Image (cartoon, rainbow, N blue to C red):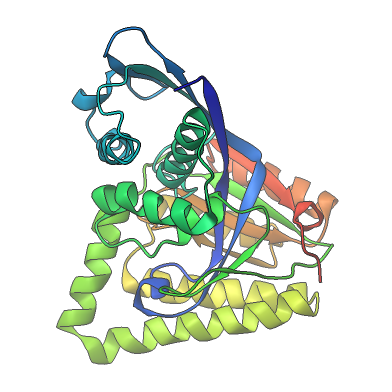
Length: 315
């Protein structure tokens, strides 16, 4: 083993949350300005330790969300025939945990890249996504795979569960404003809630899920034609369905309402919901500045912006 570093990005689900678990499409994009790095440094002894902003100590003793990383690293060390190799794993992240920005998947992606580099092994994208699934399943139960696919990408992604993600074109104008409620999202609980609702009342829930899928398809057309108004309408339609599914929250609704009152073309939660972050669509930079001010006044604990012209693969 040698010292090596892996990187990954935050991800934002533009549209398609929850429905993507049931075979509907989703659109997500990496946010390269919000990065995570993992550095592996070999030790002379056999200790395996991790240092990060949310856990420091023996890797084997880590609780969630690091329990998934513990399983991942253990299986990878077995793969590399290095189960007794000592190391320090240092994780530096600008992503807030449990906010729907893919923190756990970004951590897994960066760790996988760091370990493969540390053992001088080539890493295919398929292998990366397979390894990331080890951690994601341990943490989230039944993940769609969207987070890992996007935090490891460099371009926006069209994603359908069970299929390889595909790049999707984005316009060169328009800005997403991302705002944090300050409340941790509840991914596993939210996914389980939707599953329970679908089982209990499929006649009510199935149209909500297919309706989100239809909104995703309209959003893809809007992106391809640079129709920001139509894109905003699709975001709003998705949010209505997500709220009906019960995965929104008072904190999210407060920020969504504030964004719309400030003229957002569309606004919705992003990620699992029940806390976490929301997104608002602005026509341009000046419009985004107004939304940022309104969201800050409404209680957002952090706000970021992502201009579509920062995304590779423009329409």
